[in-house]
Structure formats: C-alpha cells, structure tokens
Length: 138
Image (cartoon, rainbow, N blue to C red; front, top):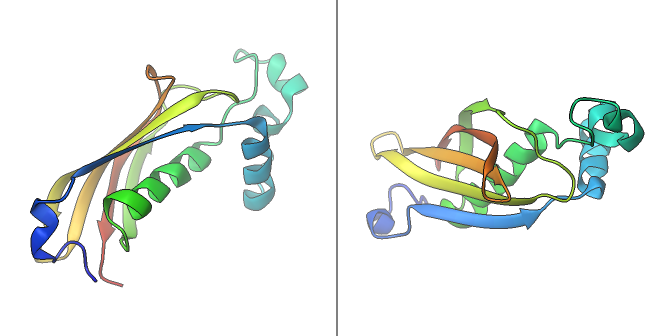
C-alpha cells in the first residue's frame, strides 16, 4: 500500500517521536558493520584525550535511527530518495536521544514526502538535523 497516495494520509499523524539511549556497544557494533572504526567512536582512551573527552556517535548511525523512525512509525513502506544533513553537536555514549520526524510537504503527483528530522541529546543539544525526501514508489 502506498501511504502517500492513500486518501487518509492527511488525517494520520504527520509527526513521530522516539526516545532511545545510545551506548558504547551501539557505537562498536555500528563500527563493525560500517567499517568506520575511527577511534573517536570506538576507543574511549583515545577519545578521552580529545576536546570531546569521550567517544562520539557516528553521524550515519544517528541518521539510521531517523530512517528507522520514518519507516517504522511515520511513513511505513517508504523509500529514502535523498537527504540533507548537518551534525552540529556531539552525541556521547550514554546520552538519551529524542528523535523527531515531521512531514512538512507532500507531493501526491510524484508520491513523495519531505520529512524534517532532528536528533537531540537529552532534550537540548542537537546532534543531527536535516531533511529527507522519501517515496512510496519502489
């Protein structure tokens, strides 16, 4: 079923929120899967000597949580077409994240939706924000 061409899309929730605590184990598993084993993400001793003082989340790990929220809650069955992201602040192991996604525009002709996204740390510091264009057409 195409959620963007369905007549009830205007009546459904157009925003979704998810809370999740990230851990060093999350960082380590993402590094193994992605191959991004930069020590700022996976080596607490190295990270302690940096200006951050501890390990940081991978930016794309944060974005993968955003994509999960979009596909699981906001627009099930959608497919990501493009993304524009910035990572203005750090996310540390142990931080509780608030992940928000909101549909800001729907193009019913193309079956596309523009989704504004944001990941905040403990409700204040922004770790990732941007927009994602999705389509239900596969």
